Image (cartoon, rainbow, N blue to C red; front, side, top):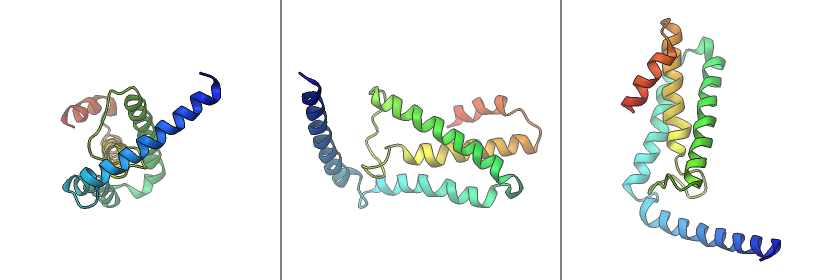
Length: 136
């Protein structure tokens, strides 16, 4: 197979996968199903919690830490998904990364609130992190 034939095959397969994912999502993970609302809740509730609990005097520092956690976990998740180690059955939309609620909300908010707590109370963040990870 030559270069153009490979890319033609890849594009056709992606198109077929996209149609299949949209069909699956509308049947099993769409707006009318309970998994969608559970995933939506996991996306929104941590952000609302963050709004009321973040230290506004240090907001740039804390949000930058949360952003770093978000990027690291998102890339880790994408790599694991591409390697076929993770395959979520329910997701918010077929267009965005499937674990968006976890990588963009739950983990960053959890870690940045832990970071805020540890720095405000002179605790060692690195000692508290494994405890929180085990409880997740």
